[in-house]
Length: 418
Image 1 (cartoon, rainbow, N blue to C red):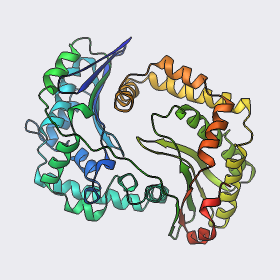
Image 2 (cartoon, rainbow, N blue to C red; image 1 turned 120 degrees about the vertical axis):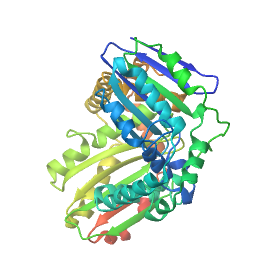
Image 3 (cartoon, rainbow, N blue to C red; image 1 turned 30 degrees about the vertical axis):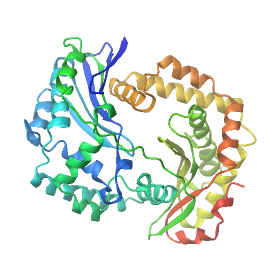
Image 4 (cartoon, rainbow, N blue to C red; image 1 turned 60 degrees about the horizontal axis):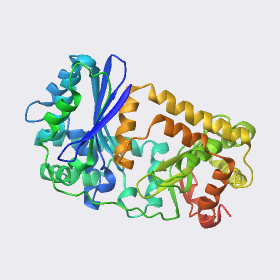
């Protein structure tokens, strides 16, 4: 088992992670996403990702799908705030075909106008579906408030207004501005021993030339409250504070803190709010880490009559953690982190993404031993120090959707963690 990488003259990084399996998971990761959009471009990164499968100079949409599925493989993509990814999984003997299709999508997409119109309707339906899903919508409102009037706070899907206006030239301009070679990683994990992977990728990707420099997006956290009155059976609630950047040295302690607070059935929030008080069915904490900011928060869905009590009880648990953490809680969090990481390393799809994001975020590969060591180094003191760092200057954000959501306006958001 070995991981090698090289950087082509044009700036593209290639990662070759050889493991003894019968398949190859290959993808192209671009260090740009919805946060790179201008206000009138909201949703264009996501639409571009959709359109990449709709035809190239060499293949129409049906041929792209058939060539992969004829050999039993699958292909997919996603857009996030700061990363766009195109990836596929095939048997080892079809690795070269996989590289060829991915390079064709990246280099030669034609964005047929009739496909743009068709996909526009699909995405607008997706936006409507998101609005109809309150446990998605409450997170979208939370992010909009936490990063007010900034690309990071705008929806990845875009809005009906912006998506309705995108033309072929807009997609090409966003691609040329952000899909630059030095912002791109081609990562393979699996078995490609029957081909020279580095050579094949270099042949397919080295001709990509682009001197544009994608803009660096810095996000600024803003506190606030947002309520959306909806006639629902449950009230959805997300509370959070600013977390850490994705390269912060304390990022492992932050994940442990999130697990202790609300990661699993043994966590403080689950035990206190659901098991002891019966105030909700679902409650969990989460953390997101980005290039210039991050989030630590929790989500819950509860009866409209219990929302005040749930919020108060949950914040009591947050405040308690600043004063007492048991060694058992630390050990449990570390075990969950280690097992999650190790299990992920057994999937070549997860490995391919893991190494690609290493390169995008850190400019280097971080070994499994380094990750395990960082997890082992988490201590009670490191989490206490982190709580001091995050909680004392916290600017909370609260997002609520449901009946009587506005009743929480009476709260002084800035003092909720005091």
